[in-house]
Structure formats: C-alpha cells, structure tokens
Amino acid sequence: MNLNLSVTQKDPEQKIFSSSYASDQVSKISEIYKEEHNISIWERKLDSKIVESAEKALIKNPELQFSEIVKPENVKKTLLEKVDSDEETLFLNNDIEYIVNVFCNLFDLKQIWLRLDAINEPMCPRFHTDSVKCRLVTTYVGPGTQWLPHDVVNRSKLGHGNQGKADNKSGLFVNKKDIKELDTGHVALLKGEDWVGNKGSGLVHRSPHKKQNYKRLYMTIDFLDFYLSIYKIRPSF
Ligand SMILES: [Fe+2]
Image 1 (cartoon, rainbow, N blue to C red):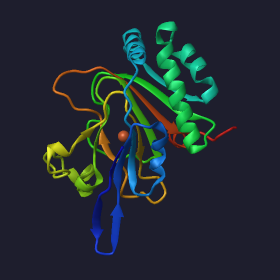
Image 2: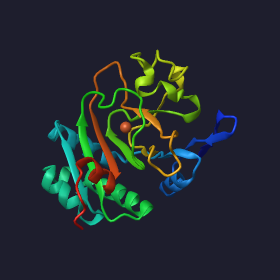
Image 3: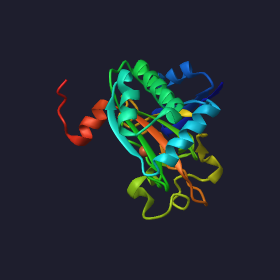
Image 4: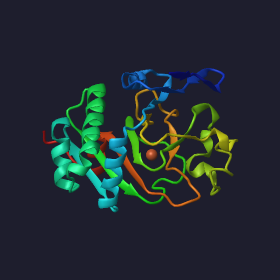
C-alpha cells in the first residue's frame, strides 16, 4: 500500500488537498471517496489467462469500438452479442463483468456506460481533466493512461492556457519524470471536475505517448447520467 499525500497552496486562504492513492487490494479503491484523493488505483497484476484472452480479443477485433449501457447481470451476454466473443475470450469477459460489479457496488449503481476500444494511437493526446464525477479506466493490452500528480500541475496551462504550445513546453509541468503511467491491468478511478467539491482538482491525464506504435485494448466505465448528458437522452427507466 502506498499513501502519498501532498498539499498544494492555491491561495493564502484556501488549501487544496489532492493526492493519489494506490493499493494492491481491490477493496481499497474506495479511497476515491476521500476528499483528498483525485485518483485511486488498484495496482493488480493481470492473470495470464486474462492477458491471453484480451490479446485474442484484440486480434479478432482490431477495430473494436464497443459502447453500451449495461447492468452487471447482462454484461457477459452483451459482450457475447456485440463483440462476437467465444470461449477464447471468456476470461476477459469474466473480468470485465467483475470490474463492472466493483464499480456498481462502489457507487450503488444498477447500470453503467461501458466502453471497450481497440486503439492504435493516442485518443486524447493532450493532458486534460474530464467533466465527469468519476471514471474507471483500465488497459488490458498495451500501455496504460498517463497522469500528473496534482501538486506538480500548473493548471493555468491546461486547455487554451497552453497558448498553442506542447504540454512539455507550456509550463504545465516542470519535469518529464513527474508523468505517471498506469501499468497494464491496473484499475484506476479518476476523479473529474464534476465530483462534488472537486472543481479545480480533477485528475490531469492523457492517453499514453510512446515513440513506437502501440496497440491497446482499453476499457472505461462511466456513470449513466454522463452518457445521458452527452446524448441528451431523457431516462425512460
Ligand atoms: Fe479524459
């Protein structure tokens, strides 16, 4: 377990506490509920059967873009229908079902927005924060999401604040070594700007940057209300 607290002095009146939390125990991912954490990581090592299964799924579905609203009880059925899965990807599907259950139990949800994508290049190449309450991310194949600890970020350089400069030239962060990267298999909860009380402290993150080409099998889980707000759909359930 690694508890790393840091304090950033935003102005003389207001101290913002924001830090990362990491553990090898899945139950500890609930540390995201603590005000001072803007990322909580379950540092797990993927079982070789899941790795094999995920690699096979990626080979079979090199252009995969799965995006569905699912309930914990219908995840596997939906994956079987939409991803053309079979017994070779059983271990992957079992794991996805498990992670969906973790997310739903943690936030007391009946359904969520699940996305599973085959990716060849950075989807979100610039560092940014998300306008969400909280997003779960994990990478089954390939490099994981990169992020910056709160206390090393000059947030005035995010978005238009970069004045057209690359992130490593804008002053967003000082030292390249400050960039953290999730390992393949790690499951992380990224707190966004819309988490109550987290305005100005959403986790700064981006897709992995690598010199060489890469292939990823990347999964995200979002709250249903985020999906509904994007697609302007009124809930009918
Ligand atoms: Fe993002």
